[in-house]
Length: 251
Length: 291
Image 1: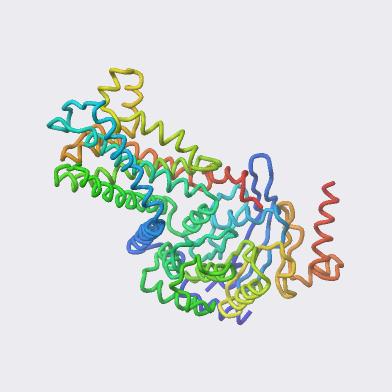
Image 2: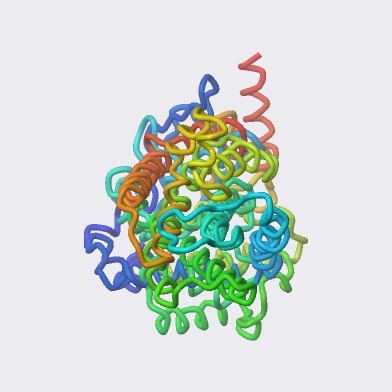
């Protein structure tokens, strides 16, 4: 198995423009397996563009994105097969039940109904929603919906999970629940995680943090390291200094 | 590192990513998409009802009102004089499919629904296959609507030959695919759409009224030769005629060819438009979803 040392996600010199506006500028970073990487950036930093490229909604204009060595452009099937995605916007069918949503997703990955049901029960038990399997999504709370979306993203047993602002609009408890659930996944399953957020308090000390600002990477590394490099007191301070410095540079 | 290695081992069986998909898995995917679209349609009761009420209003009210005004002489495929209601029935069947095609395409344009489109597009199966499956699913839903309409119309004395109900099925599948593909193409090129009104004004109404759905083309020719030519080049006319002939157990070969050709054309265009590298989706990014 040569795959062990390969990064779960590698983004190499990726740039992306919408007409004249440059959304991503020479972005490079990697996420190792069994790592929690936080992509930290304000709104408009380019996080969603990056997600659209990783999930191949848009083609990569410049650079390469690889998921465990599978190029998203050239081997998109192989790459998407081991990728789990939680989008920023809600993407569940509100009128269908939890189980129906999950089996639909399984079908999109070529997983038959019986197998899908078993896997669904498994993942639902893990997010403590086993008793809601036959409820309509509409009747769930925001936090529960997010948990279902995470369960759905895990159904095909991906090795890389990417989440775009998964905690937006949730209350403090739901946020903490989801965060701890995803962290547990890393410990138990060895999944690599890229978690995009603008909420600094979601960053833990032993996470990898990637600071994205106006389409460029300002810092990448262990939180303690980034904080030390900036000579900051904590990650919040480091983030302010980094983005502040970038702003004054631009001005 | 050792835990990471152990973990990788544990999930290794799930990652035969290189292997590709079997025919069975392709089928599972198609079935899943059709099943979801049908379920969603059945759950949205208002959509079902309005899909039925729209043609029935035309049949019950418009056709009844115009019965005395518009006489329809004997033209193929009809062998006797027919009432106006009978004449417009195939046009209304095609109208159901037109609305259905545009509606499912429009639901892709809406941001919330765009999310659903995204979950579809991150499937590892080839994108052209996903789009074709979506098209098949939309067509299946339109068939449900059309047969429900025919059932109600039967009580209104619209009684085509029994064999026609069966023979019209392949015609409806073709026309459903054509109109669905057109909708999909429109959904990929339209940048922003506030509501249904735009497509209503610029696609549905022009297509419907410049066709043979409401009046035979020879009558149009008497009124305006120009309009007659427009009608003849309107693919919707051919969808209507294909359905009309099939409903009376006949084949209109020209319409069949036009509908097949247009289906292929629209579908290829839609697949190209949804292709991530060439596609218009990425260009659309400039208006939203960049945050």
